[in-house]
Picture (cartoon, rainbow, N blue to C red):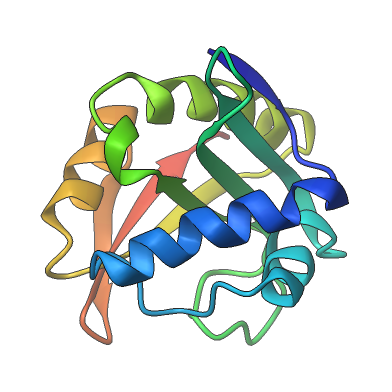
Length: 153
C-alpha cells in the first residue's frame, strides 16, 4: 500500500470513490470534483490530504485534516484540526485507515495542532469504532453526531 499526498489530478478518483460511498448509503455530502478540490485538496486551511493506493495505483481511501476557524459549521474549537476519513467499501479491514492516520498525525503534530476532532454520525458505528481505535475519545454530542477528540498537546 502506497501512502502519498493528494494533488489536484486526484480529484476525479476521489470523487468517484465518494460517489460509491453515497450509493452505498455511507455518505450524504457532495462528492463532485469541485467539492473535492475545495474541501480536501486545495482548501486554504488544509494541513494534509493523504491517499492510500493499492499496488496498481487504485484508490483505497483518503484522509484530510484542516485547521478550524472561528464559527466553523461543526462547532469545533478554533485552531484545532478537523479530520475526515473515507475508505472504499471494498478496502475495509485492510489497515487503510491506520496507515492514513500515521501520516495525518505526523502532519498535525508538525502544524502544532492542539487536538483533532472527528464529527461522526451517531448511527455510523464503523466510523466511531475506527476513531476510538486510533485514540480519539468522545467529548461531546452535537446535532446527531458523536464528536471524538484526539489530543496532540
